[in-house]
Length: 289
Ligand code: FW2
Image 1: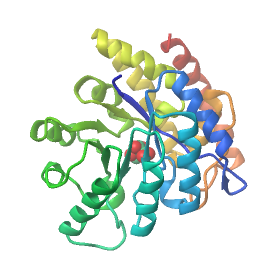
Image 2: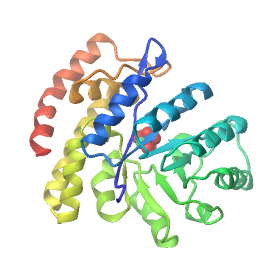
Image 3: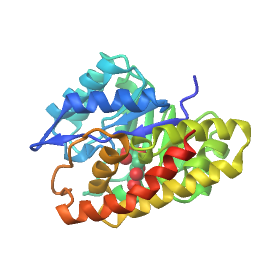
């Protein structure tokens, strides 16, 4: 099976704690609706604000419902990173991934090489690098990746040429782009997309995969533009917060809220957002057929 559409799955919080039952139900629902795999504890999953115990519990819960999961295990504390890799080794999952730590202090490049290589040496699963320069301040480009032994990269960049460079220079590397705005293009020219919108329009992604393999580019672009509108709408309210309301509304079940300092939307903001979303929901339903 080709894993083309990967959802960086949200972590539902209720009264300040991850709601593991809600998370399991959400993971199951999006996989049932055509998403190929989930990426847990990433940016959208608010991974950096989870404790080690919470991340371990998420690894266990998600792997209880699917083996189609990549877990983001990166962090600023190497003991915790090692504990997570070991937990993942005991679970049936697709792989582990890490962004470039530390995203606060500065370290020389060879320490980062050592960091990723220690994960690769310890992990019994394929290892993916999560490149997110806008978040971490470091760009792990093709020349960096050539120094470590990993299976793939999730490149969160709105510059497609940057993602393509990995493919050109390292042809056996699995390359995913992590920008929602490049989801359709990634299905056509890369190994796939890691798109947060797969949390709330999984059926549309399923249709996009069919369109990509049938060469139906006009319909693919139409779907992409709809996703763009929803993401742009969410960004007005703070996307990491708004995605909870967008997902609850479009999926028809409650996925809780974020964890401060990613604050939930205020009542009035939510009302405004949902009003504007109603029209887009109809279009998404039509286009997913
Ligand atoms: C994640 C993703 C998607 C992000 C992107 C950041 O882990 O949430 O990289 O939505 O704006 O892969």
